[in-house]
Every structure is written in structure tokens, then in C-alpha cells.
Amino acid sequence: MAGVSHSTPASLWRAFFVLALAALPVRLPAGPPNFPTAPDLAQVGKLDAATARALLEKFRDSAIPGQYFLEFELHALPRRGEERVYRGQLWGSRNDEGAITRVQLTDAAGQAHRWLLQNGAKSAVWTLANDQPVPLAEAAVLAPLIPGVDVSAFDLLMPYLYWPLSGLP
Image (cartoon, rainbow, N blue to C red; front, side, top):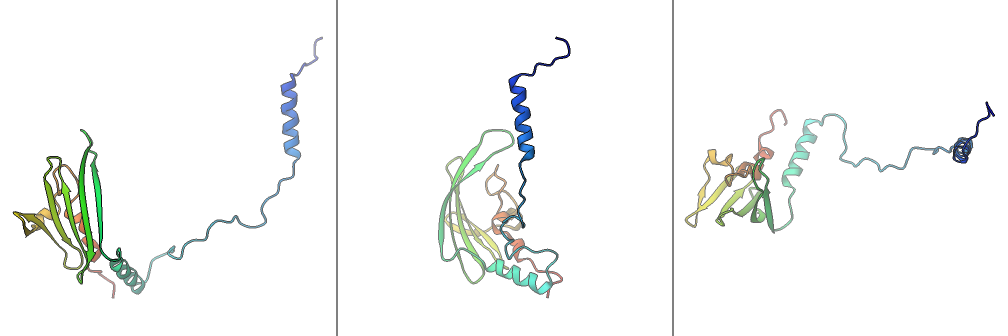
């Protein structure tokens, strides 16, 4: 029987379902989808100087209310070598100058390192040497707090939040 095609039952069923789907009416939603609206903080364009200053001042004054204490683990993941875990504690509060933070970090040898950080327009860092607070030298502010860990006192202070705003009233 030349010229007669024998289709498999599976092919016939596939064709039936394709035609049935094509015949179904498609209903599109009448309006836009119910996406959440943009928060009030969403903006387009640049802020004017007064609004920018007010927003920065509000951010500078924001903080965790009251005093707080945290215990943490700092995982140092070097590009080469084994992961190192440092355990630490952090105490925080605010004074008239800004945020004040005490940090204690224990290195791999088990030695505790302590710092006191005063954030604000007159930021400062002290370390504990022979149980006495010693101001951290300017050059040491950018150095790693513990060798092999790329966290410095500068990172913890975030002093750029308090740099003068050039061009704003």
C-alpha cells in the first residue's frame, strides 16, 4: 500500500491536544498586574541640597536604640589557604559625639585584641596596651586590625559619613 500513511496513536493525540489548546480563548487581565507600589524612598533624579542634607543628617542620627551587645564569629576566607575563624564581642551605645563601640577580637593564637571606637565628626580609635587605652596612630587606622584579616578601624568607623558636605548649605 504505497502512499498510505500510518500515523501512530501518540501522534494523533499530540495533534488533537495542540488543536484543542489553540481553540481555547485567551483572557488577558483588564489592568496592570498587582505589583506592590514603590516605597516612599524610591526616587528618580537628584535631590536638592536641602533634602540631601536632611536625609544625611537623619541617617547619621539613626542607630540602634539604647545599648547593645553582640557575640560574633569573623570568618577569614583567604584566596589561598585555610579558613580562619575569629571570635569576638561588640558593645555599642551612643554619646554626644555619636556612636561609640567597643570591640574585642580573639586571634588564632588565642590573644584578645581590644579597641574603642568613637564615631562622629571627631572620630577616634583607642587600643588597649598594658591595660591602658592608647590612641591608635593615624597610619594604623587603615592597617588591618589583625594580620591576615582585611578589616581596619577605618572600616568599622565609617568616618566618610561625617566628612564635610562640599557644595551643600
